[in-house]
Amino acid sequence: MRYPESGRHERAQNFLVDRSIVDRVVELVAPRPGVIVEWGTGDGAITLGLDALERPLLGIEIDRGRALKLGRKVGPHACIKEGDILRHAPPEGAVIVSNVPFHLTTPILRHLLASRSWNAAVLITQWEVARKRAGVGGATQLTAQWWPWYSFTLDRRISSDAFRPRPSVDAGLLIIERRRGPLLADSEQPPYARWVARVFASRGRGLADILVRNTVPRPLAEELARRRSGRRDPSAALPRDLRADDWVAAYRAGCQR
Image (tube, rainbow, N blue to C red; front, side):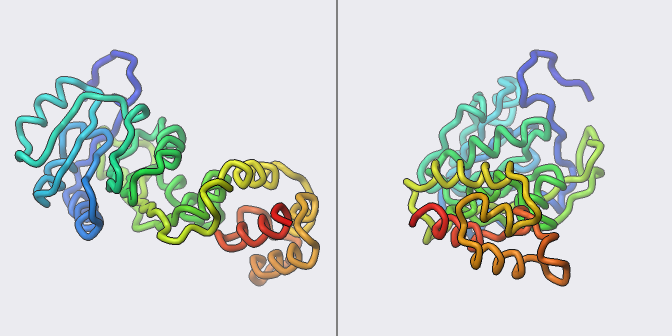
């Protein structure tokens, strides 16, 4: 299958063809209230499934031809618009759905997390991205920077056979939800994110040493290292092993004194 050679980024997408995955996406969206916004509707495999929910549905698609064609297939409660998902501002309380173009995963996630109006997101991403965002096998810096405000859950692995063209890696189904009670005030996000970045960039002999170098009192730093080392030597623990409540406790102890 060939795609228009326009140079516009969202067109390098792998389209979902596995009906069971479409059904699972719809199942995850159904109980979550709010207008549904799909970023990158493509040929409409997910869109038509969401349309069956008969809820307000807004699709954003950069390919004008595909947007027009899909717009003629959906019901009166749905609207498909031509647009760039990296410039789209979701409406208040929206549920975001996207089969994320793999090569744009990080900028799309950053744009999504910085758009503070939506309540939930059901995303298809690369498998390793989905795992790490959910903190499976170790969280990434981006997850840690937003954990006080969002929860990240890995639903399942999706075989590369579920897409056409077939990508070189499997995908994952990732759910992101805004916390009803954030672990830190919204005003703390910029300084907290900078502090998390410093922790991830710091060198040291294990997690406790790294945290102490970043203003965390030693007793708490050592307790977190023990807590997250499992059966390993506590010196083997690293920042990626911390959970959301660990990050908040360390930040409050080290930076809010």
